[in-house]
Length: 475
Image (cartoon, rainbow, N blue to C red; front, side, top):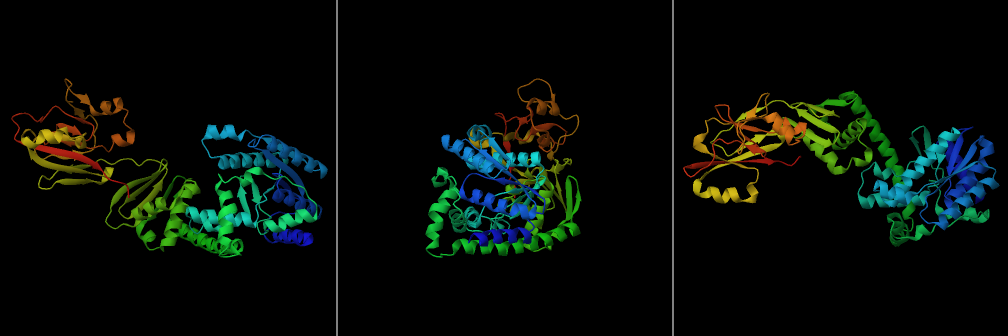
């Protein structure tokens, strides 16, 4: 068995080019059976391939004395093999509090940060991790339960470039039982991590409870899940290549802008549409893990809907999508707002405002209905006007340079710009918030913000004009 395992790992390293002759390889060793066996196997292969092996261990300080004992064990193990060893002591519990991350995410982040530091220190080309085939199967099951797409079903990669080194997983085709047998045959001692039995961790519940239960229905479940990763890996590679071709054919990319024609996008299969959106967002530096299905679908719908002409969708705090007729533009800066003006047709009762993704709802009411309506909390921010004191036609428009309002409750007038600044209103909102203006040019209302002292409803009012700005949900 021991020759079979070493030979199997060596063949896989050569086939997948996980390491080259003469490489410096940092081996992440926790002290458990998987990482200790990996170190043992790579050490046995080192002379043949002229590898330089460096041992790296992180003491996360989660388990006090037990964590310290593991660090000592790894240091002694490396010394016994005459290998350089770097021990990182990191107060992960303190970092969890500081960064507001969950325990496993914080530990992983700090562990990888340390491994990269060791790789840089020794000029290493590879960092070897001890994830095995059962880990891969558990990862697949976790992703299926949480909801994932085809790219998530690829699982953990055997090799992945990160920063200046490549992360490799030589054991990813080896099952835990083979690793434990290898350790037993070579009388290799290792540590047992008590936290592996704690069911507060999702992965542990999958391994301890769900996987054994599902194996009652399929004894070969881990193998089945791993075959699925192989199939999806090939199909994902193919779709990635096709998406790259489409990107090069229909997308114009310049540092912080990606532009394409809507008609070209609409002709693509839905699978390529989704992948192209992901690729564009990745190019504009939106992290892959934040590209959830609902976000991708919201973007896709905006791009393919026929009834829209112009619209802006803010995907994220740093990415905007601007749709103008037949053109779609993804950009990492807020679009310059364009001035707009709409005449309010009194024969209707609503006005669409695509510039701010809103609509104006308006209605007429007698004075007798006014007091009840005005006192309702549903109408906070609305405006009620004496319809006979306004000069028609009314217009709803964006702010212009020099605009002034005579605010209710204040003497004289004030620049609209200064009112926005005083209220600390964001610049992007200042340029799109609508102003209600009558035919004489008087500003009667800054929608949802302030009203003027003109056209106030009083005891002699006969007709009341009620107006409400309704923000629509982004689609």
